[in-house]
Image (cartoon, rainbow, N blue to C red; front, side, top):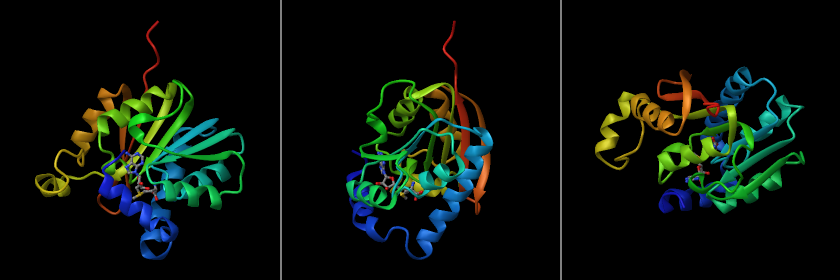
Amino acid sequence: MGRDRDVAAFDQRARDYEEGWRGRLHHEIADRTADLALGCVPAPRRILDVGCGTGYLLRQLAGGCPGATELWGIDAAPTMIEVAAATSADDRLRFRAGTAEELPWTAETFDLVVSTTSFDHWADQQAGLTECARVMVPGGTLVLVDQFSSLLLPTLLAGRRGKARTKRRASKLVSAAGFRSLRWHDLYAVIIRAVTASKQPAPH
Ligand SMILES: C[S@@+](CC[C@H](N)C(=O)[O-])C[C@H]1O[C@@H](n2cnc3c(N)ncnc32)[C@H](O)[C@@H]1O
């Protein structure tokens, strides 16, 4: 499980998660993430969203990917998954409760793995990224979006100690998970950034 307090709070907020200014903010980030992801992988077949919340990003991706056969979302908060499943009519969209650190798929399943504003809550960020690499086909693409900024350095001395909240720290973890060709993108305001990376093909 992720940090229990964070996940419990998300579970409680799930039914009105998409309401109000916070809902609009997450939609805007998700819309920009979908554009970025489809710029990197124009016609993905199998997509995974890790920490998918209520599934808004996957619904956007489904609309832009007529050729996709399966779009899976996983989230540690069961009520998020309940809401996501109830709101998603497209039968290519599927949802499961579970964590980034233990993804319930066999190796080399997805050609696109996305995650928006969830990474900061993963209990073990390195394990989660290693799992993202495991379930991705060689040459597949990761799009990881969260708060990454040196402006957040003071928070690392307090409640977010040990978290990868800077480009430098996150790049280290993404590379250690086996991803290559990292590129950073400014996504929203000054601190929401995306890193895109690809899984290294297996050596011959
Ligand atoms: C801020 S919400 C983001 C939801 C959605 N991705 C969005 O952009 O609106 C963070 C989500 O990450 C989930 N989460 C936290 N820790 C997790 C973990 N270890 N594995 C999977 N999901 C996790 C939470 O339950 C929550 O739904």
